[in-house]
Image (cartoon, rainbow, N blue to C red; front, side, top):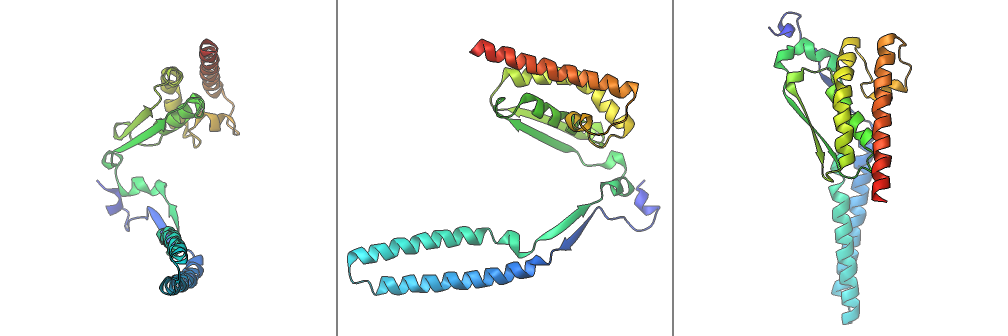
Length: 220
């Protein structure tokens, strides 16, 4: 049963507040557009009163370049005409829907180069997503490695073992920072279970870095 029908009005899931600078943005766009139209008028007069072929082509090329620049500017104005501030209230989701009625979510994590995108950074991203406070049967996480790197594959093989401990730990303790790297660099509670998880995370990081170093030596 939907809990919202039992507790009265449906609580909001998000709020929307227009920003004041939209008025300045619209005024600036109007002035800028007027200047562009004046420039086009000037180019048109230049083209119509060209006395030589060289001056005609020069004016024509300048006109075309300004048209391209004006088009590029106009395509970016939609973002400035009505800027808003959004605030979400995820804590109200369970008051609106039962967890079994949550929509299914597919999350894609893309990587390509293990040297530009270190495998541990990608692993931390995947682990934080897997530990979302969301029904597990409704959450699917996909990792796409365009480079087909052995380093990334090894990191995720090790992360799969760590994830069996990390994901339940986050959900049982209601952890906010569910990225291992972010959690262990914050002021976390010191207890035996936390220290156990930290040692596992340290072991994952060490093994992945050692494998990366070994792989680099083999390629050298």
